[in-house]
Length: 223
Image (tube, rainbow, N blue to C red; front, side, top):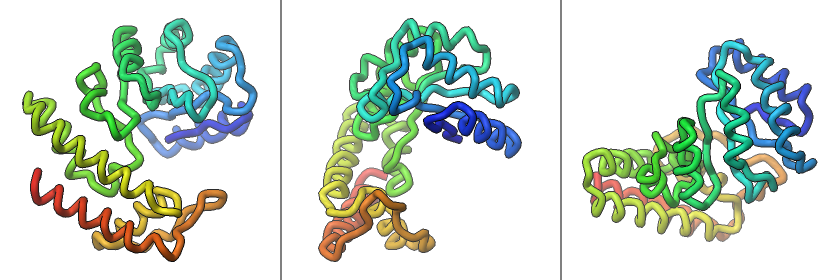
């Protein structure tokens, strides 16, 4: 359960609530407005972790959006907290996964476009925004990696990237596109996206249908 807010008190309340529900771990990005120094970020994360004392903690590193990047010294400081088990790494350099893994952290690959590369760099698995639309393809990438079938894994990864680029070509937000694809796949109507994310535009229907057809064709070909 991701619990980070731009103030510690709300984040601690959410962490405690998540623990009461029995989640496996809580996760947090750093504060995204204040750009705190490493000491301040560590205190923020440890204060959140203290509010869920019986639950594992996962650092969420996404510097291109948070404006603050995880560093090796900051990770080393955080790993002094026994509840800190690892990192969800959504920075684009695959090298980051290798560095966090080398420090002994469990690492999850964040960018869906590089799952295969992230696994090769030491990620234990992945957490991705487009997995819900095409889980069969990502499971096949994971299977290929584990089986040493890297040529096929690269083909499936490349097709996932093409599908992501197609989904992102819509005027509406990518997650609005994914929700509509899930409906086309027979899933429930789960509404659109919340403001300020942009909902679907009238011209997005063709992009959604094309994305859906690309997913089905890839599943048939590779799975």
